[in-house]
Figure 1 (cartoon, one colour):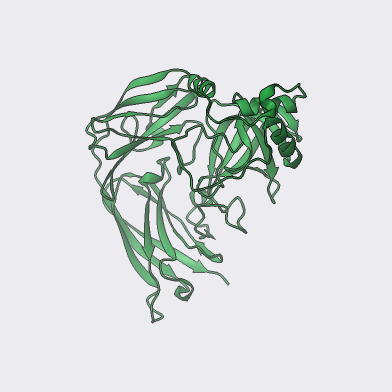
Figure 2 (tube, one colour):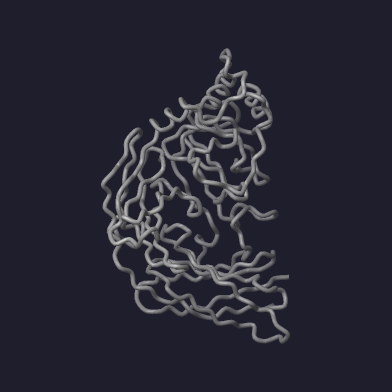
Length: 384
């Protein structure tokens, strides 16, 4: 059981090993022994935790290019989700009515476990070095109504097995797919004035989400879109349109820039919410330009320093910007470089510098792109 992938169309660069069991009952025995906490839970809140977004402009924070839990980083330094579960039943561990699980934001590196609103899960969690319960994509967890997990639950509840508990379970049986589709819903609608095949709609749960891996749907040439199966609950819709390499539209439903002003659309199990009319307004792009300085350019190789312009108003990663800065050269000067981001759409951003090595600090700059161009100054400091 490797996270029971609920949206089969998404592919990951991560390969998970098996749970170690040949069939559900054996898997439950093995996973129970190695887990620090075993429980059934319902996700209630997803909180994005990232030092970049939480920092003030006075704070010097690690500049490590952290899109994964790199060795030596604490949970406060790499971007992650803190998922709060309502505990429905505990099998191992001293748990209260709710429990928090730390997981990464992405799936390609196996740090990010994927949980969906409205689904009850069986989870086998382990403690990290910091003592927090944590899970990744390859951690054992799954939907409690799936055939495999039902077999594991019978073992954990000390119930007698049925024949399927002692057999290898086939993924996505016809009955399993029918049950899954009856437990989920869809959102379908149209984008006014969308370019042919140029846009995507992201479906962002109102209880929180990772900006890296939200469910998405392509906009068809006629402007229509339809989500894959979604867990029950309320969702924000975000439309991103790209022309070549340029983002030409990035708005929330029904046509606003930030999530705070956006409306939600509710998904009901077994139903398709159709007829959603999305009217993205025309957005005037601007530029964000400035200077980046460092106290030790000798420690930076070609392409090590990256200026990141991250949306802090809830927009997914498709609306972010990045630019590589080359400090490499024969002469000690300059330690200051000029940069310019063109075609930046209105929104709230955080600008910072990241590098792959340890020992570097950066300060963030909060940027509101609304009218006119913006000029900012960034710093990259090497501490021995």
